[in-house]
Length: 399
Ligand SMILES: Cc1cc2nc3c(=O)[nH]c(=O)nc-3n(C[C@H](O)[C@H](O)[C@H](O)COP(=O)(O)OP(=O)(O)OC[C@H]3O[C@@H](n4cnc5c(N)ncnc54)[C@H](O)[C@@H]3O)c2cc1C
Image 1 (cartoon, rainbow, N blue to C red):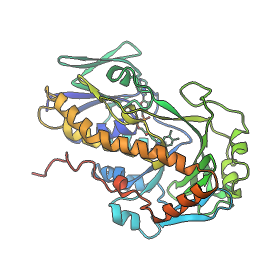
Image 2: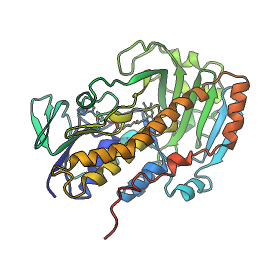
Image 3: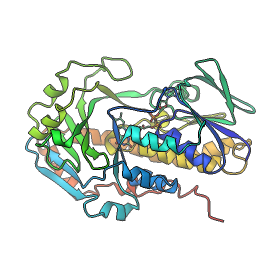
């Protein structure tokens, strides 16, 4: 096959795309700004709609060895800890039976390690910050901070929420601060005896705030939490996380159930993260440049779908770019199809994540009671998210 693909960003989407293309014989170079792949103190929840593709890449077994599968999905009241809803996940294998893959909590760095180790030597170039990208008649060229230029048939911007590549495709697009912010942390289960069901994935819902947590590690020995607050508005810092007064998190969650307070205060307060959403882009590609993952559709993480949608983007784009002729002048058709297949779905999940943010933060009263009653009757897994096969229209038919 002729042609090669330059991927900007060795995050979850960029690495999944690299592996999917490489498996089909397409030449790939991944350029990553960071000097090493490791995000300390963070985790990610991977759902079946993403993990089914990790299975196709032959990586699911390895991922399961270093991950925890939640026992149940539970929604709780913020103050008295009452179970509002509870649905089995791993406890009876029902999630996997329904969706054909498990639900896993994993250290982000472990996930990136598994993906990166599966890439051939030399495919990922670390400490390679891309500062510019240009599309030409016979290919696309990126310029690195060092001044070096790297040429390929097409360039994929998988460079995250504050994407540099996006400024070439959609110069006016900016991620918008949602007016909500978060603290995160990883706590050993042994350090928070008051937390009920640490092996479950749990949402604690309270006025103007919620806490999500799930187990991680091969023996579910730790819990990753994500504590979300309304405000501050406007966001006081720059685009990224800021250091805040050390007592901010503890004060914001004073009066919450003792298990929650014990978990949030068991580790030093993390930086304070602004949460963004990206208004829908009118186009995802320009010439030989195309966007993927957060660069194309940054979303609130309340459906746990940012990473999973990046994986879906990657496998669909790989199917289309691996088709005969796609890198030999056929990129426009491939990009057009990719955008048509991915835009509506990612928009729908973006919108639903925004609505979920408001629902999780309702003040106590009739609206919160109605929400709780509705939650009990809902499909907890939103089958339209976890049950969909993103490759249904692009997977090659076996010969
Ligand atoms: C607090 C929080 C919790 C989350 N929890 C979940 C969850 O449980 N489940 C889930 O599915 N999603 C979750 N998400 C969302 C998820 O993390 C992102 O959607 C996902 O990482 C996006 O993947 P990506 O490949 O598009 O970008 P990223 O994973 O952000 O990767 C982008 C990469 O590009 C590199 N880069 C950036 N600029 C350049 C440049 N100029 N040159 C070279 N390299 C560059 C970066 O260093 C990075 O490695 C969460 C997000 C947040 C903020």
